Image (cartoon, rainbow, N blue to C red; front, side):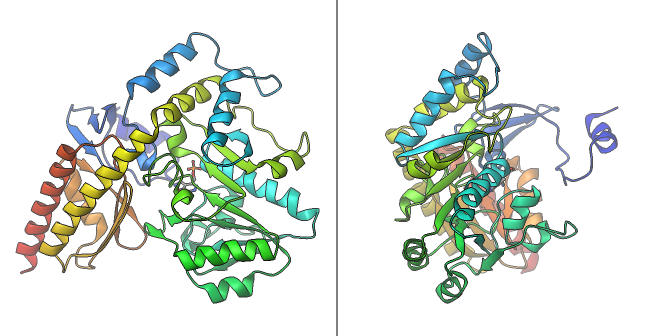
Length: 397
Ligand code: PMP
């Protein structure tokens, strides 16, 4: 049986998949079983930030694979400890817990907030409408989009949702019983939309006044994606907790929770754990990822971001009726499309041209290319987009 037929038979049909069997990747490109090449403008949903099979990451994995893979967190492990140090050095004075996925990291962050809050009579959590934090029961409870929650009742209680950017609603929701606010500085699944500076300033002010924790989900915005190592670093906000996954392992499953030192020290032994969390292979890979993402790497991301933004602005001038709004945060890009141009159709047309793209929000095209992308690949994307829009214009004229 062919892979697609087999998959339809054996895999629980939770995913709507593109009918491609991907067999290989290198840099910004992937290949299917028919050896057709695709330009990957998705990075496997903001994961393969260093590109497919980055040599330094491959080498680190191979090196570690020849020594030891796993022993459990009942013992000390050097790669894990070094990774924790690197994460702290590049965020804030803190302590780290390792997990395996974004949802697991967010769930753990919520548990940490609960342990902290319950001691202080604070049990309420504020989350934002349109947010996305994962697919476990706890994380869909924190997610502000109904489509992910339908059919899973009962969800966690005491989570209050606020409209992103609405300072009045934020003030009303934030009383003395709030233990934490959960947010993404840029809502990625929610349509690639950044929170406003005044809103985040008010989050800072209220968190101090009411003594509540700020938890920032950096699962998608982290690891260089937005041009700084972590997204929050561009927004003048000081989190108490950040969660990381996706790009941390460049495709190897690894996630982390970084918490401020006093909060970390307060956590009681035995109250949380993860079998695979921070294992040798995962940490060897993540160490290589962090070592690669130095200042000059991030500067280059910002340069490519500028270039991409300029090219898209030019395209928007040509097709203002189709491209309504363009938001560029590093190499996380959202393009709001007119309703005559459904995003599903655009993704399909790009696919026919050998380019993988993503959707977000209502009718937003999301681009998250590997951060190692060059002008050449950006140009070929823009050229394909131009042709696609021209074809569409010809048809609707
Ligand atoms: N948080 C955010 C912001 C995400 O974008 C995602 C995944 N799209 C998650 C959490 C969940 O991550 P995972 O699928 O690794 O559980």
